[in-house]
Length: 421
Image 1 (cartoon, helix red, strand yellow):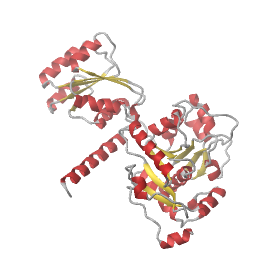
Image 2: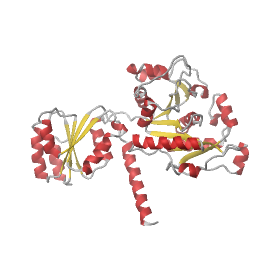
Image 3: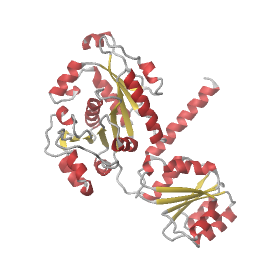
Image 4: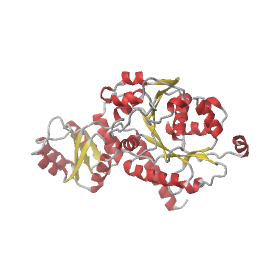
C-alpha cells in the first residue's frame, strides 16, 4: 500500500471513529451556549457542533477573545446556560482570569474551559473551583458535543431508539416496500421492537402491505401533537407482528396535508422513547417537513433504480444531505428493480461512482413475487422463504442496527436468474 493510500485509509478510520462517538451523543435540550475562543482551531469545531442535527434545539454563539472578552461581555449581559472558554494562559494566570469571570457570571451557569496545558493538578483545581469540565486542545466536534451532553442530559435517561428514514430517489422505486420488509426483518431477526411510521398520509401503502385497517393512525398523532405522549401513541399503534407496530396513514383524500417543518418532531421523539428502532417511510416529495425529517434522522436509506433520472435525483439528495448533515455518514444506497428485461440500465459501478457510495444491497426485479406479497398483505419472507431478496433485506437490517458492515452485494448466479425468470 502506498503512503497516500495508507494516509487516506487512516483518515477514513478516524472519520468513522468520530462519527461513532457522535452517534452515542443524545440530542441536546433547548439551552443557550456562548463560547469565547482565542484560536480558529478551537472555534471551528465548536461552530461545526452548533450546526449538527443533535444541536438543533440549542442556541450557540461563538465569539473571539477568550476569557477577557467573556468578562467584558457578561458585565452588561446575563450569562447563558453554558459558557465555553478557551485560554492559552499557563495554569496560574488561567486561574486568575477565571476569578475575574466569577464576579460577572450567574451562579446557575455552567463553565467549560478549553486549555492548552495537559496538567492534572490544574484540572483538579478547576473542578474544585466549580468549573464543570476542562478539555485540552486540540478538540473535535465529538469532544464538544460529548461534554455538553454529559452536562445537560440526565445520566439515568432511557436510551433513545434510533430513527431510520427510507426515501426514494424517484417515485415508484420501491422505497416503501424496502422499508416495510426491512422493518419486518429487524423485528423478527433480533426480537427487537420496531415502530414503522408511514409518513405518506394521502397515498401510504403500509396498511395494505401489512393487511391492516386501523381506525386511527399517524394523522391523529400529528394533529394531536400538543398532547402526544406514550399512552396516546400506544393507542394509535397497530400491531403487525410480535415486535412490529405500525402507525398507518389514512390514505384518503378528504383533506390536504400541509405540515410545518417540525410537525413530526413530537411524534418521532415519543416513538424513540418506546422502541429501539423507529422506521420512517418518507414519501418522494420535497418540502420543509420532509427535508427536516431527513435532516434529523439517525440514518437514511436511499432507494434508486439504475436509470438517468434516478442518478440525477440521487446525486442531488446525497449532496443536499451532506450539507444538512455535515457530521453524519452518507445515506445507505439500495439499488432496486435491477435487471428488468429489455430495459437499458446504468451499471452499478457507473451509477455509484458520481455518488461516492457503495450499495448496501442490489435487488433484482421480480414483479410476480413482490406483487403476490403486496396483494396478500404479507412480507416477502412470509410468502417465499427462499426468495433472494430476503438476504438483501436481512443484510440491510444488520447494517442499520450495527450488527453488520456494508459489503459488496451478491449478484444472482445463473440458477438465481433462471429462478426469477
